[in-house]
Image (tube, rainbow over the protein chains, first blue to last red):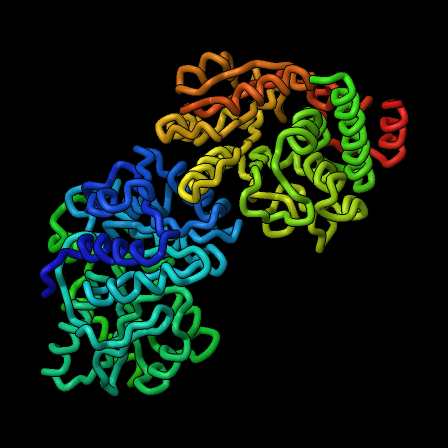
Length: 314
Length: 272
């Protein structure tokens, strides 16, 4: 466990970046309290812009800041970042080859009590359709701290899903975490569990422990970067284990499972199962309730692993 | 404004008009109406007001322009070509595969284009971002933005309208090309946008209303807007869609018009 929440790591890392890089700017759309970015504003008021409840304008202004040479990090809830500002992000930021770092907070079930209106299960899917966009979600505080500077460094726009609350830490400070490269957290020869994000990577680790007690050895991969996809790593483990389970706090039809399936279909047909939202809208509840309601649990990963192993061996 | 300057601008505007009619006519189809209505504005900006260097299109301390009604690109391309940003011959490549002059403005293709536009409603936000970046960098220049009247129906403009005064962007000078027409008919019939002066004033902008084809009026409004201490400026230009293109002027069908190169040549001859 970290002593800081994810959002504190986000803000502190941006402050560190901004201290050495005067191009870094911060944008908010009346969610500064939620994202916890006030310390950045206090330190760099001249580089902080809050546009009010106007997400389309936020992404448009961010695109203009980028055209003026700046590197804006613009955050709002993921539902608004992806759905409401899609055309602004598509055209003014990406088509215009700008350098906008869009951040969608409260991904999937982490929207909790804000419920179905605020629960993005489709943001990765929308973002995947934007050519050359980099899409990622850190699974813990250490990887967030390590991925953010790489996103700032990347020449081009990025979309980051950000779990705001929680102090999970499964990486150590010395681990190498590279944007665009999956991290193998555990080696196993029977099956590969690929997970993305703050909610599902710990579930995948826990599921692998349960499976291990039952004599099934699973590889666990943290696929923090969804685009560009680490194809070599997936193909390597598809060959090695012959079966995969893909876990995401997201709609099954268009996220990481879809990306992995597209790759396998063309390059190396291999049995693969999804632990993801099955064509449903969001709803209210605690994140724990919601994980259960949508099957985003270690128990479901274990179940899907057994199904995929039957397919592999059958 | 001196008489000689005025005559010179009128001459330049005529040349830009001719190039624009010629370029679209050579292709056979294009957004002639909304291109013609901003020719005087582009002329006075590029020949009298903007700090630019055609040899260094990305000069750091230049004034910048966001043509939010990006479909009027051909008028801007003619202006930029005439200023020497790129060869005039490029105008005949308009919209052809592989061209550097696409129908809607693209900052990554065309020397002198400061922002990619075309999805209506987004340019004013971009202009705000450019003006904020200039302020951070302590560059004391202007950002100009041109939006259409039909475009003003897009909600994002009004998000931007709130933001620019809040950020005290006195270096941002926007124009509305109020030619009173949009694709489906007269703006007042499709979705009225009046009263633009009252609207922009209420949002906290210094607001002006001028004849958009009159250089003296444009000149004074731009100079007054440049003196603004803490507010952005909106200059509402009454214009005629298709202005100066004989077969298109004032025609409701002129938004995106099909016409022959012969028609174009006749319209150019009619300009005298």
